[in-house]
Each structure stands twice: as C-alpha cells, then as structure tokens.
Length: 211
Image 1 (tube, rainbow, N blue to C red):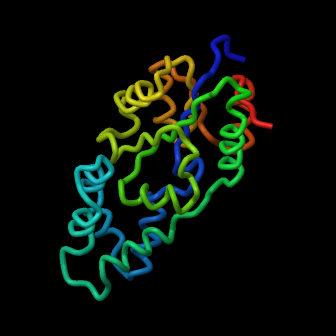
Image 2: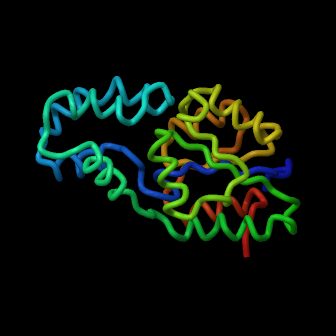
Image 3: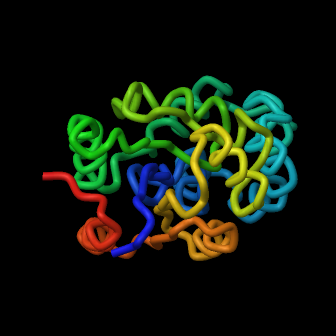
C-alpha cells in the first residue's frame, strides 16, 4: 500500500468502462455496414481524427473529409446513428465499482472521481447520458473539451489542476500502456487494465476500495 493517501481516481472511458468510441474496430463495423472501402476510409481518417478529437473540427467537418466528400446513398444522419450504435458497455463491473466509490466517498475521505478520455465532443456528449455516466464523475476531462490528448503530459497536468491534487495522490486507470506510462512519468500512480478484477485488486493495494 502506498504511503501517500490516494485522494483522486482518474478513469479512462473507452476500453475501461465502455467500448472505444471510434477505434479501429468501431470504424470497421460502421464502414462495413455501409459497404465502403475500409482502406480508403482509413487513409482519409487519420489526419482529421486528431483535430476532431481535440475539438478543432466538428463531426460534420470530420465526416465531410472522410465519407461525404462525394455523394452517398445514405445521409450523415444515418452514418452518425450507426457510429452511436456500435458503442456498448464493455465492463459493467467497472462502472458498478465506480458507482460504489461514488456512494461511499464520504466514508473514504471524499476521494475524487474523474473521467479522462480521448474522445470527440459529439460522441462523448452522446455516450455520457446514454450509458448513465452523467453525475458519476467530478469532472469530465475530455480531449475535445480541453484541446489536448493522452498521452500528452499537458493532458494529465490539466487533470491535476482540475482535481487540485498532487500527482502522488492520484491513480489513473487506462487500457493503453502508453497512456499509463505518461501518467507515471508525472508521478501519478498508473494501472493498466487487463481485467476488471485485476484493477480492483490493485486499487485495493493503494487503499482504494468499495464494498
């Protein structure tokens, strides 16, 4: 157990709580659904996606560059509906654990709970209410909201500023090693998710537990 009390937990969204909003698998599912060339889509996706996830492009602008640069037999509304439809709860036990932390936080010294996600504004604004994540976190540190993406150090510094915590007081849970490593470089405790049980056990060793 750490000698410094953990006073804030930082949670990734896609890959830890929900499926990833627009990762390779989600893109393939949607592009395949509409019968488009996935290779061609991927060539067009990379550059605008970075700007879109930083909030520098709207979803409409992103889709104009990747899909609707030519006439289609389906509408943007149809495509967006399918983008939303591939989102699912990935680990219900992780969401349940966070909910228990929320309800028991007074007994645990009011440990802060924050969401840290690389996500476009439009998909995040859909996913938060759709999967009942509204009100579950003290702040939603989302790449499109702050113009920064993990694993940038500035992303994590922003989370520390918003939480008003020192790095050693925080633990960050993510499914990607590069993001966990970036947090650790700043002194934040990092846990890479392999299984929900493994995360819960490692959090318990840091003094974070929910009955």
